Image 1 (cartoon, helix red, strand yellow):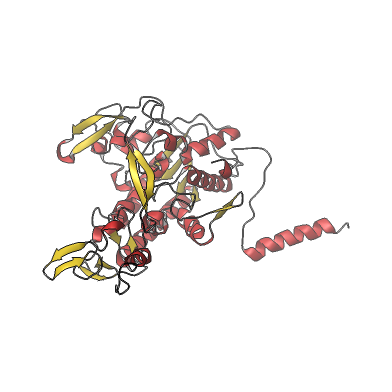
Image 2 (tube, rainbow, N blue to C red):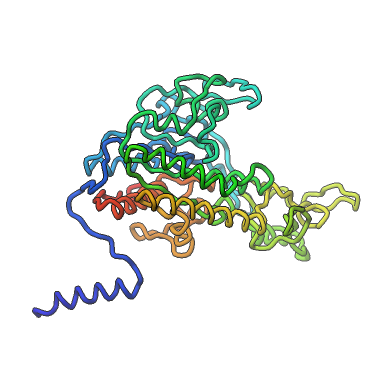
Length: 434
């Protein structure tokens, strides 16, 4: 019996080696370790702000991953954390999606909540066009998440005249703002930061099927990321950064599938050859071709249009089901466009990890994490969460941003990375509570 404890330890080590897993260190008392958590700020875009269901509103803000991280950091001596919340009277913020039903093919239908908004009006910002203005926030800010911001826009001084979510944080009013995002977030001293910039340097291109917006130049991305990290660490600050996920694994690109559309269409005509899309060839030309499972139909596409007669020079032909009536490229992230996104994301992530490692920052590898979740899912209190739309349990209705539980999962991954890098013991959150 005396040898039993040693045998147990040997078996535990053996299992860890065999499975290739690093055993998480256990600690009984919350501790900041080597991290200075006196004033923590969060830098980033939609994910950071708590954007959810296609909008920024109070419930999503309250459950943003930075808010959850800060809540856990306070157990380890972290300071207070303030967010630019919409008021309870204007709790619906920019408005958001709600599920209204399902189409015959199982794809979801949405309505938009447009009451109790935090909108104060509109302004014409010269060459920037019309800007929707949100109710100004005038209190302390620790969460600087701005939905829509790209890394390539963080030094652009007129940006407060382009993005209403940023404008609401600024003391000035559009169209007269002239302060860059990077200068604004670093104006007040801080000791620690989280940074998830860069997602929007890919996402708008992908969501538009490659037809609107452009991927940020890879060299420019590296230069700007280095600039931002240098400024964020200029006074010896510590922090944690995240890489960019493979968005093609997210529900926005997988809720509507080629096979799903064809299955519904063949209930009417079993002889349908396939689904036709307007796709990019190996160069820069777009031509009609049969869709494959490597092509991603975006969530914004209305599947009810499939098969409706379209007038052509060859007569009235069913939409989406002939080479003369293909689905427009704006509704499809085709195989070549998806591969292009992958190349850029890989380059961006190499830059993020390299720059973070030089500065000794913690890294949450979101790319690897979500690829693993795609394959294996996550078990939470006996329930398997995955990347499937709506019922997968992690994503909000817009198919790109997360729900409360998804943001809790992300918060935990950030916390684990911070604990490893700074010898800290910040408790992870109970995901089942969300």
